[in-house]
Image (cartoon, rainbow, N blue to C red):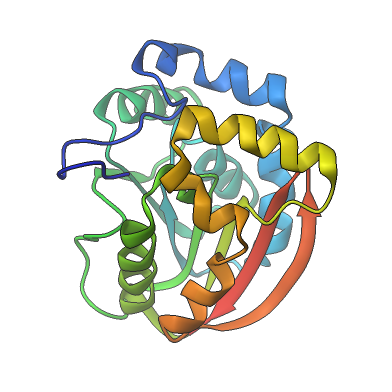
Length: 214
């Protein structure tokens, strides 16, 4: 979530003062726990994979994965210390054990071929185009051979209403950050990094689900 340097990033809800209300806002917009459960279904977890949650936010996805697949190892990264503190409290309250690390998608602190599966939910529209490309290359690097990446974010709008809503969203996120999403370029960035796209036709409220394989 870089703007000018590694410490310049967009917070989870675009504004720092909204961070404490992030979970409430997600539920309000339809991207809360029920949405994360849909994401887990799409991940097709087998039960013993090592999973990386990129931009884990308050840890909702991590908690639900561990509840359903307790033997799966899942690690969350996020550049926002405040959101990670909230996530840590939620994990403790839910009695879920998982590692949380302050890190950036374009500079993942892991060796090559570490993870079986990576997932990013509504993070890439915060990133500038060059950071999107660098992040995808980093994700490709840390995935094992035949590893999978589920990229979930705003895609090219399919209806006039979704186009209007995403244009409004671009006002808050920044036109440059949203441009690649609105022009449908995320699949091209995935292919450019070496990924093979397996599924790219599912949309939900303007959100595109891209399943890619290394």
